[in-house]
Length: 111
Image 1 (tube, rainbow, N blue to C red):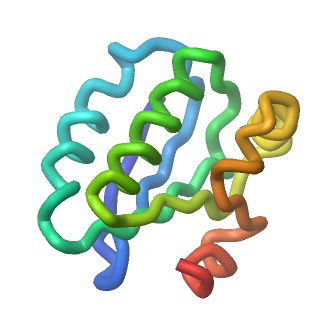
Image 2: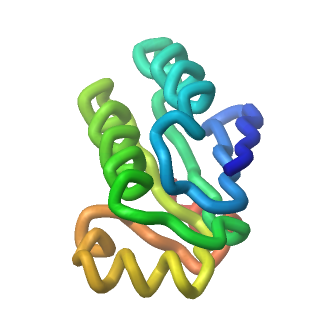
């Protein structure tokens, strides 16, 4: 799994790509994200359009980031999601927890 984080002013854009199957793959992301929460700007937009696969460990990571953002008084939304990952979110009913938008642009307008 690869990721990038870019500051968009009002929010941080987190883009994930590849396959998220082990927590060890995301250690850098977790540390960076923990450093952001509590700094005042706690709005995050996560782009999952290039994420090919995620398993339960990866879903747990996403849930943890969502919880951390909320606990800091912020928000984490998903904008752009691959069909496989979206299907998994629906099957696990996580689409009722996460705000999922079809595109990064739509998510940014609603963040």
